[in-house]
Image (cartoon, rainbow, N blue to C red):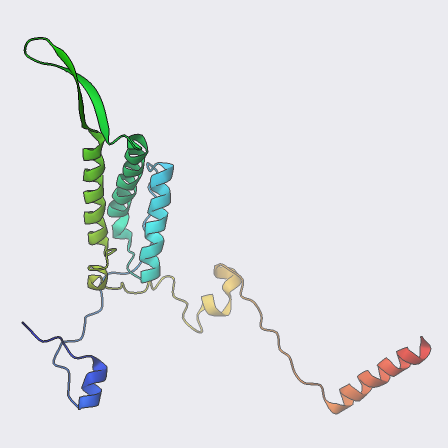
Length: 195
C-alpha cells in the first residue's frame, strides 16, 4: 500500500521538497446558472438551494443549468412519491389464480421502486456536482468572473452609482483642536448661564 503524501507543514519541518505537481487552476469561468422556467415550486426551491451551495464553494458555472434543473426535478418527484407512500410500505391487492379464485395478497408498495430510483439518481447527480463527502475534494474552484470583479481605479470603483449600487462615502472623524475645544466649552458655559 502506498504511503500517504506529506503535508506542506511536514515538508517544511523535515526540510524536504514536495515532488507533487501543483494543482492547475480551472479553465472555466464562474457564473450562475439561469433560472429554468419549467420547474415546479419544490424543484425551483431545491434548484436555488443547490446553486447557492455551489456558489459559496466557488464551483458554480452556467453549464450546471441542466444538471441542477434535473436535480431539482428528481428531488421534487422524490418528495411527492414519499408523501404518497406515507406509512403504506405494504399494499393489499386482490389476485385471481388460473382457476378464477380470488384471494387477497400483501405486496410491497410499487411506489417504493420509484422512490428508490429517485434516490439513486439524486445520489449520482450529487456525485457529479461534488456534493458528497467523498467527491467534495475532487471538484475544482472556477476562475472568478472578470465581469463581476471590480478593479481598483476603474469606473466601477470610482463611480459605482453609474454602474450599479451606490458606494457609501466613508465618514471622516478628526480630533478637535484645542481652540475648537475651548470654543465649544465656552458655548456650553454661555448656554448654561442663560438657562
